[in-house]
Image (cartoon, rainbow, N blue to C red):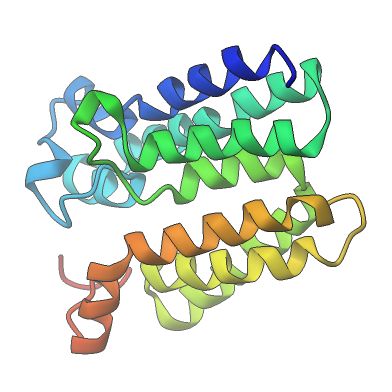
Length: 198
């Protein structure tokens, strides 16, 4: 086992656990995102409850939580299992953060940050699917789930990214599971649309 594994994987988890949405909301004098809107700590809810600037900063922070440890992993040891473990650790830190009693967000931005470093072309294709779904249906949650589901497919297109397909499958499954409440609201016609009533 690579010695860096025992250092970088726990550090990635701790970085992923940093609740950017809550910190940014407090800095902007906004409400705790856990008590308003969808009660999610991610950028979409922070943007709705504390303003667009807070939402953008939360998005950037959550992206960096995934990108920074993966970038460090590539600098230390480029074997896919090691890099994937680091990326998944950061992602799971956001989903189950130790600083919030293991109640976190849905992980879309943190996964995006990790995957854009690992497989930029596949991730870009997945992001385009997200944009198309959101533009067509105006549901961020639906776009996130469809894009996540397509990620392993796009990873399979390129030899360099194929070793990361298991990582893509895990990310896709967990993102969809974390959106279970959104799925219920979508079925009931109660999910928030972009530009719709909050």
